[in-house]
Length: 110
Length: 110
DNA sequence: TGCATACTTAAGTTTCTGCTTGACAAATAT
DNA sequence: ATATTTGTCAAGCAGAAACTTAAGTATGCA
Image 1 (cartoon, each protein chain N blue to C red):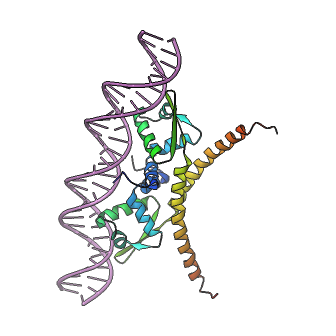
Image 2 (tube, protein in one colour):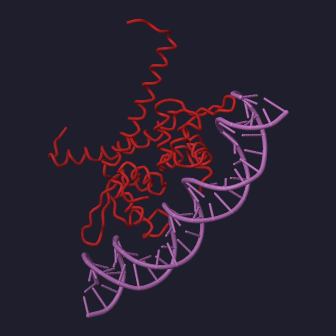
Image 3 (cartoon, each protein chain N blue to C red):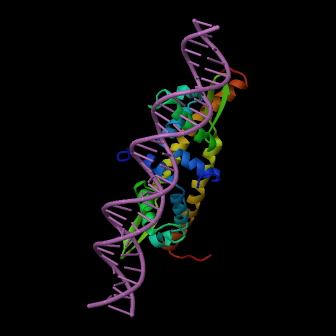
């Protein structure tokens, strides 16, 4: 139950981990190398690389290797997906709320 | 590592699970009882109750028990938190992108 | 009163995640 | 040339998370 899931599923799963959100926070200020990213994160570099793989597969991060250093940066595509998911749902429940409000205000014609 | 975490952490963790997102999707159309919620979800009612507890603690769902039936509904507060987290980060990286664009367009005075 | 419904709670099992270790590869510096 | 830096890969393990089972509670109904 983990191979062929849609992009929005992977994006939500990726953001579910606090370490990965910390990585996103750091990348928000600009592109950073893997080791710089790992430095403040009380864990081995290998663990950070694993988090980065998940972030990259989920479309939240993009990276490029030049020489021996891999530089990571935010990929907005993934964020757009989860924002869309939320706003789509909110549209549904707000529409319901509006209808309810209209009813409570008293049914009007026209 | 799970007791004193901020609300935004709990909200992201809650939405990381596909079953919980399915519950949110159903609730987006309006309030539903626990057993109605559980019906299409290939798992026991007890499991669904556990998911609901997490959703409720994360501020994404609210519920009220009347008689013997508990009715659940969306609580927008939790969603506002995670949308704010995303837009805050995007503000950062878009600002950077704007500055970059300005540089590439050629430095101008004034 | 007796029985079904709609949960609730606790405990145990299984599966998944995050992390470490260790060995390795490639680029760069000395 | 060799040492150092930067990252990659593959096991393996401990704890967390999801789920089940089973027993219990409170409400509503006949």
